[in-house]
Length: 227
Image 1 (tube, helix red, strand yellow):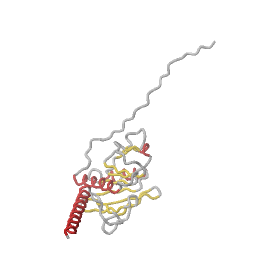
Image 2 (image 1 turned 135 degrees about the vertical axis):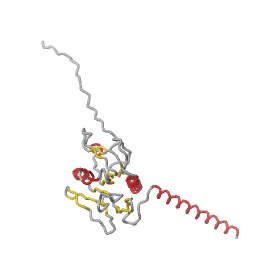
Image 3 (image 1 turned 30 degrees about the horizontal axis):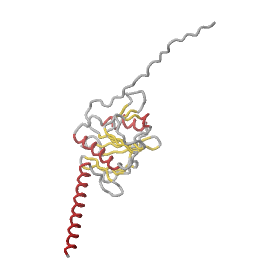
Image 4 (image 1 turned 180 degrees about the vertical axis):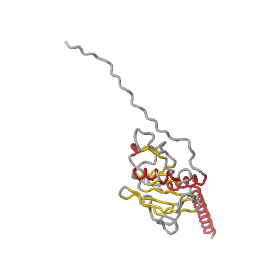
């Protein structure tokens, strides 16, 4: 008679792969670079705040190959369509299943070659539809704003207008250098997207105007009662 041995089964634990959230490097090379990044992130978040499936990130690790932590980029600012606005520690392409539709790099002395070389090639390979590079100090790029749009798998330069601006189809915005800032313009209203500070100032002005009108209305009603 054949004996059946009930031997214990050992299952090796699944290898846990660590995807770092930071490499310890500063957000931007200078205050000028940080200001551009903060403006772009804040302005884009305000612009898309009513659209629940558009996510804006800045200086976040973007992992594009599962199981390979070295396959990572850290775009200065990127926009993704078709995902939630929930905050993330990192962006993993295989979990989100959506490639950024637009990426911004604020170029500097230490990143200019990478921005125009390896990063451009990587974003092209990943099918990022639009890629923008801006040099706030006008030291490394001429012109200081350059854009590329994906067509049949390859990047092609986006034509610049006479004022140095260019249009983003993916964002439905105009990008225009303004001193050391890169401002975003609504093509329908021709208004610049505000910074958080400018938006708060506008809100305060609107509240003050509403309060003033309410006070004037109350005074008018009081005058009518006295007649």
